[in-house]
Length: 256
Ligand code: ADP
Ligand code: MG
Image (cartoon, rainbow, N blue to C red):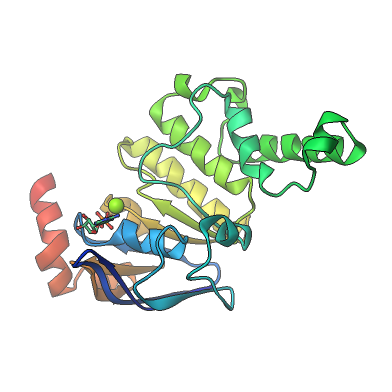
């Protein structure tokens, strides 16, 4: 589904990614972990086209996507959430999710003004689709609440619903449970599994919450200072000396 090949990303002399390669097969839940500043978000930004890599390439679903614009890449079936909540605060939950579908519609301004059959059909599809996604993430009772009035955990679920409205084959989540309590993060773990098992999606996620990552992911890739230092199933990564040394050990010490 996704192949990152020997990617370098250099920002004015600083190498944020050095020769990073990564393969995510279809229907996998793949975790990307590592200390702050290790290049995780940069890698997501390269995959989604926000940055063109300095070297290397990204192949998605058999096609090279590195070098394409983010909106073009998103139309190929790749969707993301951001590390910080990124919603329209004055819009309702339903309106926020409907915007996710807009890039897929074919009607133009003239058909919108004249309320043509195509326009009405697509409006109905956008509405039905948004309602389905809100239900899927557990926000069926909040459709008419403004985003700014939802509690933090629900705002993050709303972002996921908006993303799912574009029907992505590959979903990229940047710290989906940051700032959530245990119950909320368990709910997100269930939701991610459901995206894979019922929605048939492939997931690549960044997260520092170790219980969440270790219980949810099939495979993990560990970055440190822009380099891949380990890769494998959670059971292996947990016992990897280098990973404990530069990341897991420090986290355990912090939470102790
Ligand atoms: P992580 O998500 O793992 O915490 P980031 O990918 O955000 O790390 O950052 C990796 C490194 O790249 C950091 O040193 C950061 O300062 C740098 N970086 C990220 N984006 C930019 C940018 N647009 N310009 C310059 N430096 C950047
Ligand atoms: Mg980050």
